[in-house]
Structure formats: structure tokens, C-alpha cells
Length: 94
Image 1 (cartoon, rainbow, N blue to C red):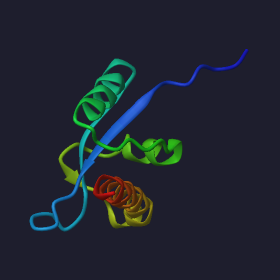
Image 2 (cartoon, helix red, strand yellow):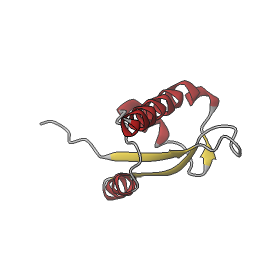
Image 3 (cartoon, rainbow, N blue to C red):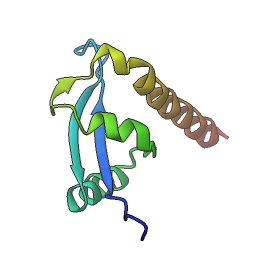
Image 4 (cartoon, one colour):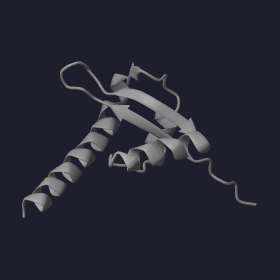
């Protein structure tokens, strides 16, 4: 019998002027995860699925900066967001 995966989600925030590293601002499983995703969609925030990263993020405390050991993985997420934002901006200018 195949084990059913638990839905998980997390939200990150990074303010270049205030933060020295991205912060975990929300995390949760099942209904909490669904709410995090719903809020992101309602606010037109990018959503990136990464099962390995969510496992790491789920072990962190909320409102804490991510540890240096996770910078590379999180940098990939912010790069993804930057690329999406740039593509959307370019499409809107056409």
C-alpha cells in the first residue's frame, strides 16, 4: 500500500534593506499548507514546488532567518521568482 504524501507549504520573505538573509514567515501541513497556498495565489505571489526544500524549511522556526547551509537552495527559489517577475514585466511592456 502506497503511503499518501502530506501536503506541506512554507512562505519566505526577504527584504534587502532589513534582512541579512531570507526569513521563514509561515509553514504548515494539510489545511495550513492549503491556506498558505491560497493566500499566495490571492496575492499573485509566485509558488514553487520543491519537496526537498520544504522538508528542510519545515524544520525551521518561523520568523527566523534561514541558516547559511540553506542559502544555495533558497537562492534558487529567489532566482526563480526574479525570472518570473522579469518575464511578466517584459510581457506587460509589449
